[in-house]
Image (cartoon, rainbow, N blue to C red; front, side, top):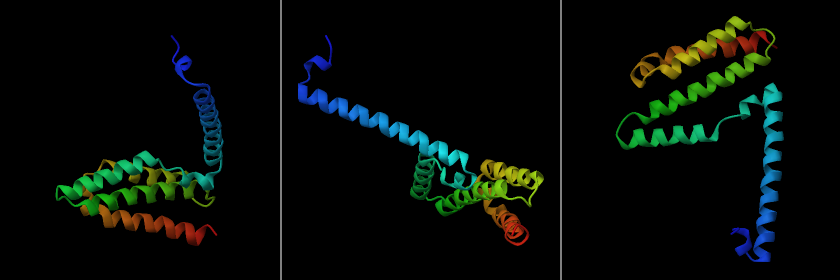
Length: 141
C-alpha cells in the first residue's frame, strides 16, 4: 500500500507544492552559501547558527549553576573577534602569513583554555588583538 494513495487530491497537490518549494529554497540557499564562500569580505557573515545557539545555551546553563556566565560569553565573543580578524587579514595585502598564523595559534589556544586560565589571560589577548587591528588600520590604508 502506498501512503500517498490514502491522501485526497487536494492534499496531494499541496504536498507536491510544498516539496517543490523545499527544492527551490535548498537551491537558493546553496547559491547564497556559494556566494558567501567565494567573496572574502562576506566570510564574516558565515556564522553557524547552531553554534551560536549552543553557546547561548551554555551561557544560560552556566548562569543557572552560579558560574561566571559573563566570562564564558566574553570568551565566545573573543573567539568570534579573532575569526573576524583572521578574515580581515586574509584580504589585507600588508600583513604576512606569519601574522595570520600567529593569530590562528592564539585562536586555537583560546578555544582550549578553561575559564580560570582565560580569566587570567584575557587582557593579554585583548592587547594582542588590538595590536593587529591597529596595524591593519594604520599600515594597510
